[in-house]
Image (cartoon, rainbow, N blue to C red; front, side, top):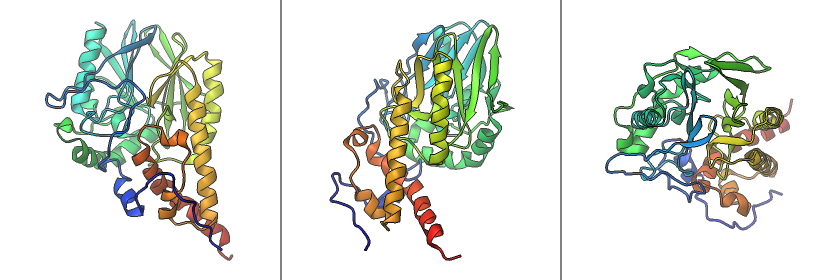
Length: 342
């Protein structure tokens, strides 16, 4: 007999509501942020970007720990930059032209060193749609990330214009113009006397780049780690993601990393975000597998209880619905494939 879900402890929309939210461009309510959000001026289209020095010339520019909204300027990403004796390395460029221009102005106010390179950690829109402000410098990404950006750019523009309105004025996708080659054992990026370790993992997307700065003990880990926020999953493969997290932990520990910069969520002087993300993915994988074997339909999954810990994370109301829509059909397909006569 098909087992039904227990009474829900939260009110979720049905499958149709989830489908309306599953794309990056779907209207969404910002969730309570557990990170200090920038002070945004919507009328003047000012993001209120601030640079926080994490150590040894390494800066993070924190976005709101929330979902995309006009109220937060669609700025929900943590970008960053590192000042070297030969110029500035920028890590991701934000969700649009306006953000990119304000990020570059912030860098100019922070250091007299010129921007000499941009590095994109994955293919998601707020990693590169600010590139127009950096058209005069090399913009680098892995080959898989570059291909993904080219494939998805038009859709990203359409969705974010619809969602973010005037914050996207004048934004046109500008692709990376140089590839980053990283061997399975890792690679090195040198700018002046500064040397950074690069590692290409996957699972959150097809290519998830990690930058480690041993001098400061800071690592930019992109979308592999989310802190106090429901992970985004439009390109996710949960098993690969979990294996990458298992690799990431010892990589960071052996490099002496003390501060982890996720792309979404507050920066922490610890590696706790890895365990957070791993725990959520394990819960999701275990329960989606169980519910698929029990024959639950998607609208039943949406009504099922979710632990209070995860319900308290930023963007839960919208992002968890997207998780279900993105991922649950795969679990259903696996069950059907396993039971199909051969």
